[in-house]
Amino acid sequence: MHGAELSLDGTRLKLHSSYDGPRELVSKAKVLAEYDFDESVVIGDGLTDIGMAEIADLVFARDQLVRYLTQLGVAFFQWNDFFDITEHLERLWGLD
Image (cartoon, rainbow, N blue to C red; front, side):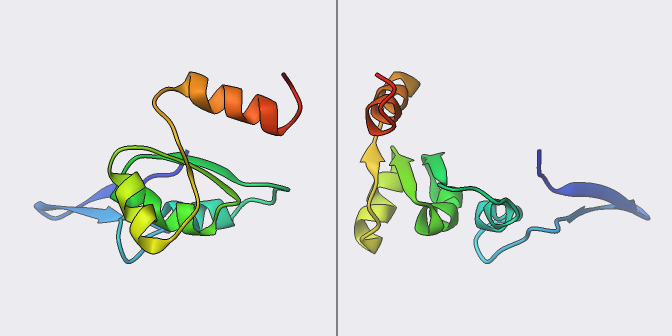
């Protein structure tokens, strides 16, 4: 699991992240880049998912992410629940 770290600096709290990005404290795109895989599949629904969706091989999007990716011209499959995702992946990978 990747996340921001919280530290105490005198009377102030500070957030630190090895994966900070231009849009979020923990850039999911930077985390994704740390891994070696044959195919990347990402599932998202909001603003903080844009970066990883832009670099992924296969994207499942809903809610706000659908609007952002449509504007950016990024291909995606829309989903409502995880059954939609499971069914799509089973067909795609010949598991049905």
